[in-house]
Length: 347
Image 1 (cartoon, rainbow, N blue to C red):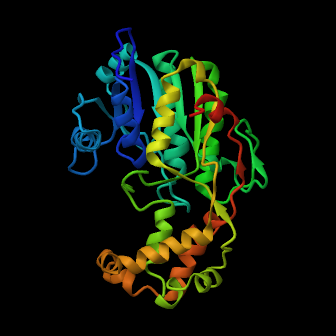
Image 2: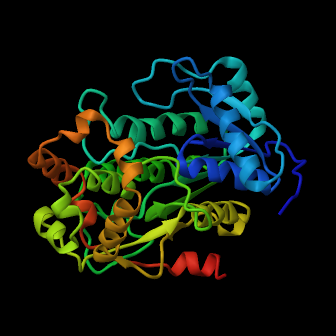
Image 3: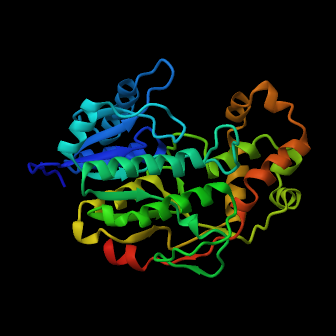
């Protein structure tokens, strides 16, 4: 895969490089010999360049080789951000970028009305990137969405479906709306390719995950539950009001990243929507059993992670947080159609 591009506009512009999936995408793009520019915002005292350097260290350590430093574009994609891309960066992007890979996103399941999240990032951020893409001229636009844009669909969710469903949470809704605005502007792109992963979990070889989000948020919450519930799976289900027979679809982050970059590298596979999902589901019962086992084995670790405030959270408050944020997340998944991903990457 290590090939050097010599034609003009051969850079890939990557968003979300400091995120869980994004850091793997950066590594796999660099392993493929691609030249990469990244959109990253400064955070507090940490500059955008410093943040990217930290991610690059992760890439080099896990790949066991050195990589060139990506071009860093210091820009906040959030809809409410007041800054824009400076003129020099914009000119450089127009001359060098031929592909955009948009993986930046907020994974909030509940609405933060003050910050307007996750809509400000997932819808507004995509709109800002869409506006940039139109300024750059025809580009190949690759968008990382989620398989859960299907909402509360029962039965089979097809890769080509774009109908408006009923949503289980605001995250699903925001990602659906982001897809919609990209499809409406598809005539502006050289191609539009959409990737819909299911629940992304840790590295298949090491278990590494960069943050306690999505499924790991449920694990962290479980660690604060009353001991009488978290040590007994059936009691836990009864207390939370979820079914152990429900199934969830999990995919490891390294496979998701390799699949996206593998498709990005083959123009004949562009212009489609792909379910990056697992052919085999796992039951909520299996998930809960694993969570209970982890908490019991790593009790000292969990105790050190819990702040003094979380140790005194009333039982009813813990349950309310779960019901507000995670109950629908642990409901039954549909069957995800894999026709196009299986044809594209049969191995």
